[in-house]
Amino acid sequence: MNKKNKIIAIEEHYFDPDLTKHFSKGDSLPIELQKQLEDVDELRLKEMDDAGVDVQVLSHAPPATQCLGVDSAATIAKNTNDRLAEIVRTHPDRFAGFAALPTADPKAAAKELERTVNDLGFKGAMIHGLTNNVFFDDKRFWPIFERAASLDVPIYLHPGPPHPEVVKAYYQDYLDDYPGLLTAAWGYTVETATAGIRLILSGVLEKYPELKIILGHLGEGLPFLLWRIDQALSRPGNKPLSFRDMFSEHFFVTTSGNFSDPALLCCLQEIGADRILFSVDWPFVPNNPGVDWMESLQLSNDDKIKILSGNATKLLKLG
Image (cartoon, rainbow, N blue to C red):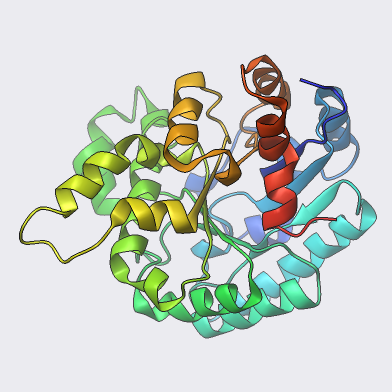
């Protein structure tokens, strides 16, 4: 890989202390990781420089504003986004932003998305899992999708905690010994892949055909399963739907936290290089392994440029 290739990483997290004070005790993180998330200057920039990452698109780490109730969500989200805009303005050549939306109040969330895009220059929004245990495809949230489509900005569906009943039924037996099973090892993947499937089945993509959805972690396993899901849903008894086509037309995937040659090859074969974007998932995953992995891949330089920066520049309208 030509070292001069620009590198844009689009699922890179931070913490806003005024938002995280509303998190539950179960959302606490190790001290060192929390320090990394709260650093939006020297440490972050040094680690970017050491790995050769030129730009991070910053998004609040989960559960972000999806943990807030309707009474407080709009005000807290607005203040959080205003502070993120100040961070971006401090280093405009190194940072861009995804909005945190008050999804507990969908109409306010749609307005906040428009405000952050038009007034603050944000590049879209990130949603973390369920809102008050409701999946994001529910029609009460469709004003957010309508606004995203009209603004021509993507919604990034990021993992969040599974529904408490799912935790109890699927994972509880093993969490004492393997707490990671609930999150990045499996629970997050199942939850977010399910959210992606539900979006396609809900009809929201037909309603707003310009809508763009981003999934991290090389598509949360869905590219590997596209053929089977599509075939099974085409059997008699199902409503007519081309699941595979809908996914390929509306979804983008990122490499965040999934630096796997076979998984990337599957994505390339299913949806093509134009719909894959580089991400690290910093600081939950270090920068260097992701950049080194991209350097080692046996891809054409044209495809590497698309994945490392070209697709993000186009999708997010980065200068």
